[in-house]
Amino acid sequence: MIVLGLHDNHSASATLLVNGEVVAVAQEERFTRIKMDSGFPKNAIDALKEEYPHEFKNIDQVAVGCEYQSYADLATKRYPNFKIRDFLVEEKNFWLPKMAGKNPDYLKVMSDYVDISKCHYPLDQIKNINDTSELRELRKSFISSYLDIPEGKIEFVDHHTCHAHHAYYSSPIRSNALIFTIDGWGDHTNATVSTIEKGNFNCVYRTEDFNLGRIYHFITLLLGMQPEQHEYKVMGLAAYAKEHYIEEPLKVFEKAYSIEGLEFKSLLNIQNHYQYFKENLEGYRFDAIAGAVQRFAEKTLCAWVSNWVSKTGLSNIVLNVLSGCYSRTLAFSFVFN
Image 1 (cartoon, rainbow, N blue to C red):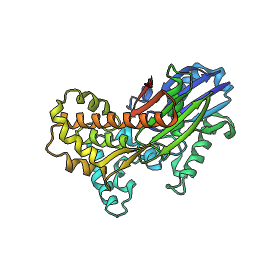
Image 2 (spheres, rainbow, N blue to C red; image 1 turned 135 degrees about the horizontal axis):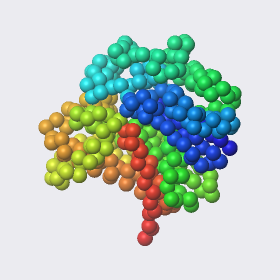
Image 3 (cartoon, rainbow, N blue to C red; image 1 turned 120 degrees about the vertical axis):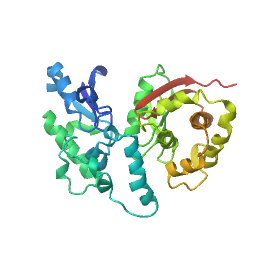
Image 4 (tube, one colour; image 1 turned 135 degrees about the vertical axis):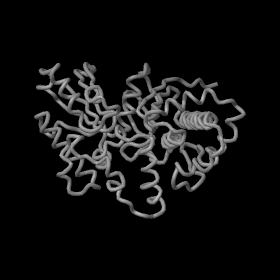
């Protein structure tokens, strides 16, 4: 069984699996020298095809790791192209008026970045740029043509299903377990809980309102760092914050969200996270803010996971947390007294 795995969002890549074993992986950025390069991973595919011509002639299935893509993301290559200043321009010229009830045109607001030729997909063929289903069919058609394989061999896999499987199979655990995924957003979701029992995966919870990843994204920007890339720097900075500096800014986060039972609940009607935290964290030290968001993230995840352990009785835990483009998988077991 030969499977080609593709990812065509930020950090685009190609992976070749033979009989369940990963034999080769290539990221597009290694060839273009553009950090987090996105879109169809043409160069990565070409490199694997040159090295493994026999396998490419006998591909049984292509798995694409996201069902829905954004036309705007592909047209602008948002994450590889945007710098800190550009995210701030996006915030001021698009998100602020949008949250105020206006209807700005994103592609006009960020027109300096629009170049539909750079993602390789023929985006000029799209009739309705807001129709993600039409874009998915165009992606499938292009992949089929480029690889010279039938469309029936191409399958789009849900974003968080990919994270859950990656988390479990990259961990040492092979018994029954609870699997948690948390990120900023993917396929209309930013958190899931799944169980694996007797080898069977079952997603038991899915939401797009678990805004922990989104909060970390905006705090990274607020501290003058690159969202989707420098979250790990915020996490590292947090260790330098003294306890008495953390206490007050931590309250800002705890007033906004909390864990209630099995869910992440909003305590306030926050329309714009960046503006909310910018206004309410003004005057606090940069390391205190980093320490507070990290403490909030840790307390939130510990409470959430603990509640699910109590609910299901499963004590083996796999937790996949994505901080920007960096994925962290933790595997551990709870001990019941």
